[in-house]
Structure formats: C-alpha cells, structure tokens
Image (tube, rainbow, N blue to C red):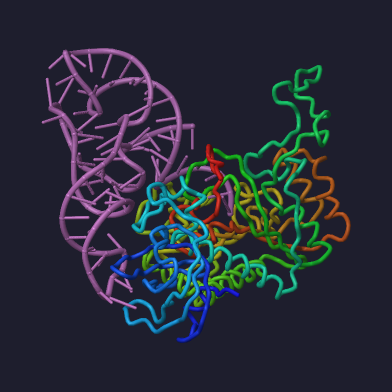
Length: 461
RNA sequence: UCCUCAGUAGCUCAGUGGUAGAGCGGUCGACUGUUAAUCGAUUGGUCGCAGGUUCGAAUCCCGCCUGAGGAGCCA
C-alpha cells in the first residue's frame, strides 16, 4: 500500500514505515547522499526524501532527475532542516521512468505562463497549475454539494443543439457532410436534409432554455457542463470551450434569484478556503496578494443590491470621467462595473432591472415596460461574474418580445408551450466556471485555469 | 475583429548598422543537512518566416506567421 503525500505531510508520524509514488521535482546532491523532493499532485508541497549510500541501487540515483517517476519506501523521521516537519529516510527506491534532463522542459525556476501553455502536457506538474487544478476540482465539488444540499437536480442538457434560437454568440457548426463535396439544393444552398440530423446542428451556447423545461417539472435544477462559443475573441477572459453553471428555479422571482447567487458564491468560496488552504495561500503569496482578502470579503459581507437606474445615478455623480459616457439606457461597460464594485461599494453587488432594449427577449418585462427583471452580480476586480434574470412566464408578452426581436417564432414552439401549460414565475442565472476559478485564484489569464484551453487557433493537447 | 507591444541559446532577457551576449538550465568536478543549495569549469544560436536597402542587417524598410496586453462581444 502506498501513501498520499498530502496525508503524510499532515499526519505522518516519525518511525512510520511508508511507501510513496510520484514525480521528482528536484534533487540536491552531496557526497554520499542526496535530497530528493517528490510530488504526487496531492498537495503543493512535496515530500523531502533522503537517499544515502546505504540504500541498494544507490548508483542508479544518478538517473533520478527532475521529472522522473519513482517509488520510494523508508521510514519517516523528524526533519532537522528548515522548511518541513518530517522527511522520508529512504530504505529502497524503484525508478519507473527516467526523464532526460537535457530535454525535459520544466526547470526548477519559475516559467512564464505563456511558455507553460506550449507544454500543456507537462505544465500540470508545476506548482501553480497544480494548485489551480486542485482549486478547480474543489470549486466543482462545492458547486454540486451546494445544489445537492438544496435538493436541486443536476440536469444534463444537450451539447448538440439543432436550433440556433439560443441567440447568444457565434455557434460552432457540426456536420457529417463531406466538406470537399457539399450537397447543394437547387437554390445553391447547402442541402442540410442530407446531413446527420437532416437540418443544421451546432454545439450548445447555453443550457438555459432546456433547464427551464426541467425546472417546470422538478422546481429546482441546475446544469453544469461544457459550453461553446465560436467568437473570435482573444482576451484573458474568453475561451471557445468553457464550463457553465446554470441554476433554474420555478416559483421563484428575481429576489430569490439574487439570494441564491449570493448564497452560492459564499458557499463555494468557503468550501475552497476550507479544502485548499495551502493552495490559496500560495495564490495569495505568489499570484495575487488580494485573493484571501477578496475571499473573506465575499464570505463575510452582505451583497448590496441596487437597480440599474440607481447605478446610473451613482455613475453620473462620480467625480471622474469615464471613457464611455454614462446615460440611462447604455449597457454598463467594464470600467463602470469595476467603479461600482471596487470604489463605491468595495464588495460584490447585484444590479437589477436593466433597460429592456439591452437585454435578452426571455427576461421578464417590468410593469413600466422600460426595464426587465435582469440581475448581474458585479465583483471587485473581475466585474460581472453572474448574469441572470426572472424569465418571462406570460405567453402573450413573450410572443410579443420574440417578434420584437425579429426571432423566428415557430422555432420557439416548445418554449412557448411551457407558458401555455402550467406556466409559473421562474428565475435562474449563469456563471462561467473558469471565471469563478480565476476570481478565486487571482490567475490573470483564463487559459491557465482550465486543463486544456481552446481558443482561436489553439486546440493542442 | 480592432489598437498597442513583442518574437535572439532549453528558459528569462540584453544587444538600435561593423566578430552573437548574460543569468538560469544542462554536462563534468568539489562538498556529510540541502530547501531556487553553494563553489569551479564547461556546453549551448537557421536572431519567427520570406523579400528588400546596404560594402556590411539581430538592428533599417515591406509582407506574412505566432504570441501577449487592451478593446469589442460576452460567461
């Protein structure tokens, strides 16, 4: 039986006989003995192992270099050196796979994230990416735990969609047609009747509409899965393939939606602090010295709530000029969102009731019809982290709004049916999972918080 | 997609018209408690690609490719 290094570092007692398996991070040689630091991905810190001449096969230690895979058995002893409570005195070791130091790209020194992206198959062995992946895993666990504790059903909404009526962003077309010989109709259009689904098909850009179907059967549901946008956007906040969390609640108005969003963020941040303390300290020390403060700020402060109109009033009386001028009716720019979250409130806030013209057709029309029941949660440093709304549940108004947006109303037959048969007020929101991990860790680039980022011109690994 | 910047050794970078450089890494050696070990020696190049100007180009000009930051769009 082998031991997990994280458990040994935390609970390992002197004189215990243990076996570990992992990858060598560094080796420090001296005459007659060497220190080997081994990491198995279970924690930020590795276990320091002392191998001296008395160990069988000592001569093969020369091949134990950075990146090599190894199994070591020995006795735990208190460490006389600084930096670790205990260390492993090796009695035997087995070298599984060597790692040629001439060509192994990871060095002991710090690498740029840009370089690490070019070695996506090895970067997860670094301190930072290791910490990111553990935090990412904890976030995902926290999300499921949060919703499951509240009896939300996890719903697997489709990844392939045959209607482009979701209306958010550019879609990836999927097809089994021979692209070197595309069948054409008599009107010289692509003849999709010969394609796999007999019609154009795409990768999903949102599971919301299907989540609404499920909410109107099970009351509270959530989706958590991959989402695709074919936008040619090259920023530190966009991916072509990302994961999205979308809760949807029946018999729930906008207030309940804001309450859920607040409870959700607090829960996830607390969970990660509880389960990834070392990793979070690492981010605070090496990546962004404000992540711990931000986390406690999220957990401890009651989110403020203001309407869009109140937000505009605050921006208009701000003693500074914005690149984008402020007036009622504009969509809030990132500079506006950051001003509100970072300088006015200095904590997360929910902005509600945006102008009808700038929001999606499915958001519930307010009584004056000038605004809709939308909500965005704005956070310091990151801006919008959650976007959601109460959905329009009134059939006649929804039909009117679909027409006003010049959308093909026949495509929405099933969405309208939900308002025809047992319609109820319902609400939900969407959260970009990678942006949450970014927010949590302080990582500047979204490509470094997902194992294998897909962006324009980049689909390696 | 737009704007700005960048691309030189395995990595991080210096080098603004005249012999291709440094630190780190790697290799070899020394060292009985290291922690980014230390010390000594050594190794290492299609200067992104293609064209042009020039006696001479990493350096100046044109085009392209790739990356980063910002913007837009958004999650």
